Image (cartoon, rainbow, N blue to C red; front, side):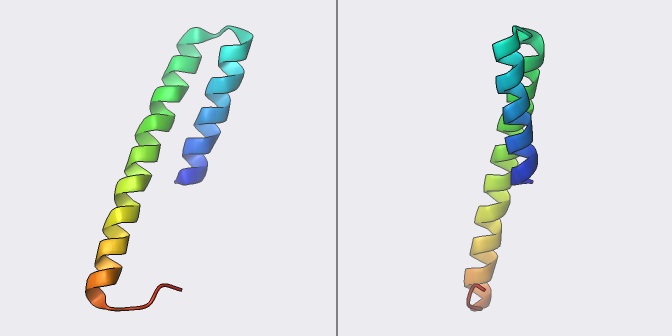
Length: 57
């Protein structure tokens, strides 16, 4: 999921450089949403792993 966020961020940067502000804004918004979803899933996964008592790989 983090790779999708990075992909949309790169698309936003390229679109911004080329002057496509609408596409750049939309891609940046999607990248931001995906990043926060990834961050929430990472925190939930870490908490579940800590509660189960298993060591991380």
